[in-house]
Image (cartoon, rainbow, N blue to C red; front, side, top):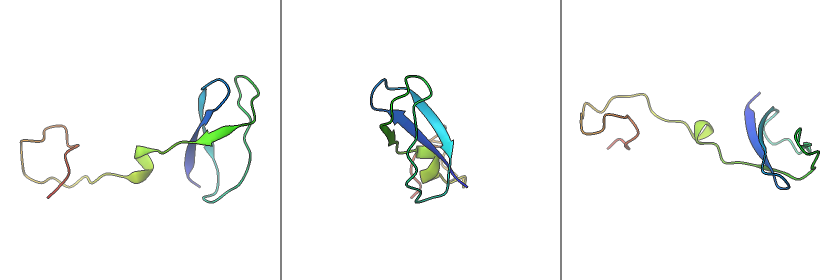
Length: 66
């Protein structure tokens, strides 16, 4: 099961939940008890390539591959 990150609309607290993809489960904020949690876009879930382009002009590895 994937891990999804949520942010509370009431207090802004962020937390992660392990849940099935496509789940409609409602989560409660562990900090304030708010019941409006917004799923956040996660750059980790988008993925990145670990392939090396052989180009040293992008030392951090965050540049898009050609």
